[in-house]
Image 1 (cartoon, chains in turn green, orange):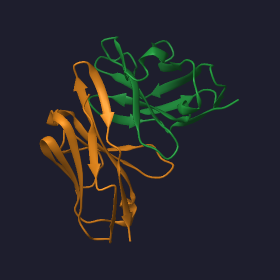
Image 2 (cartoon, one colour):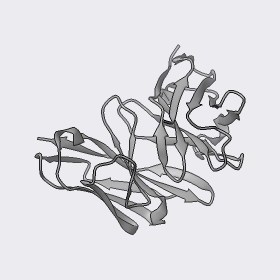
Image 3 (cartoon, one colour):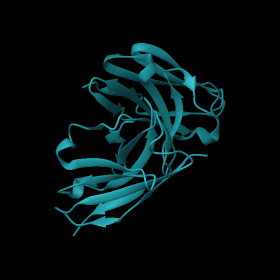
Image 4 (tube, chains in turn brown, blue):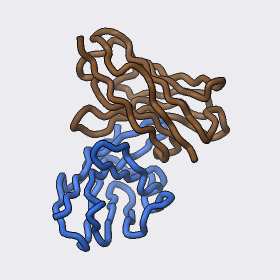
Length: 117
Length: 110
């Protein structure tokens, strides 16, 4: 059974970098055809795709966040990560990692990250 | 960029009734790239429908998806109390790769 688990600091100061890791079990992040994504949801709001690492090794990002986001994969730890620089209060959200095809079929439980001094 | 609009914003129905949730796209979406999710309070979204009409693993057959082009529908044929949730549609565009979600429809069971 595929499971994903987000981890990382829950509180980040404005202008600093948000870093989250998603640990995958039950599948390999490097398996052929597997792609991985980050999605976020501000409190009380809808879902926003942040970006994805495709099985080809290419990463694609939401244009609204592209200048601040990096997604990477660590095959040795079976993890993938999100870095979002120069955060503001508007980046406060529940951050989800997910396995991706043309839809998101498996999701982590989510991690609430608050941006505040 | 394709924008998804969902209607109604909120739906209030009784158990056993039929719910029809609409998702309209600003441009044509390939049916293979349209999905629906259910999200209950405090939980991660759950995939219900992919490819516009295929049910995900373990999803009851009272959930069905239909539509093509710019108009898609999620139908819940016989509402149950546990169907109280927000439902999102999502599309994937592959040139360049990009995902967008609709704003959601909240379903309230009376």
